[in-house]
Length: 374
Image (cartoon, rainbow, N blue to C red):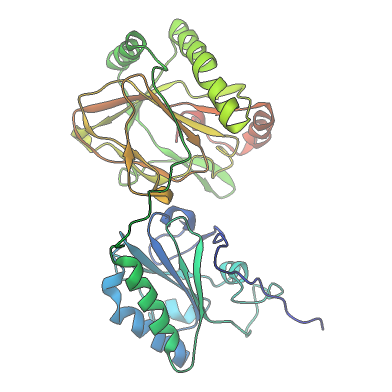
């Protein structure tokens, strides 16, 4: 029998993204936790004495895990951990993945690549991973019989939580910032259209049972959208995007935009707590073709509603009236709650002919209305 092989991750490597059942979500998208330090602990089973000691150490240091500066995820491959209640989440900050099919453990090298889903017994490599806010590996700490691994891990995490006496310069956000994409008159016309037609509650897309379905969850997203179907307004929008956005995307990203999806005016209102929690715009079959997201601000006089990119820091951005922020659909981003007034924005996606073929290929898996949602 050939020897078992394991994936060996090291500091500097990006942490693999995955979707797995957890104590807090039946389909937890790991990529959405970016924006804070993350501790992943591959302990195998809470029945193991060493694993028990490790999990006690987590509770002893639970003040480090507040979901703002840091969070903890334990990874269990033992169904008895869930069935017998041997581990449970403690919010904020402490959660567990139920990795009973070993998908995540194989992906991270805790079990061998050759391990089958139904293996009744297997060798497991137990270790901690410390990740930075961009989900890149800072440290790999194997379990030690004398418990020194806990000391190493928590000491490192405490140092990261302390203010840096010589702060590093903020990480630049890889997004385009373009003023004067829409003139004031076009902004006003789009807001007037929204006021006449009204907006409908906007959802977001999620892959469920092999199909992309529309989901509504006001805890995750609260926005009302109005479809722009006036031919003159559509033509005016296309003209500005072709003249003022397309050349910049080609210059900076060497990408030739040929298609635009969604002609909508979105409204984030303080009245209903308008916001959008951290998400990416291309993670389902229905959205995989999207390449760049565009947010063109249509008004001022509101508070909140800033766009932020958690992988690159906490700073929020809000363009001037008629200005645009353009960024890759793969980037994690969020819109903070609007606390006063209403923020109106035009919110399309850009892609090219190759992505259009992908969109067409995925079309049989899509639900109604997907192209207007994100």
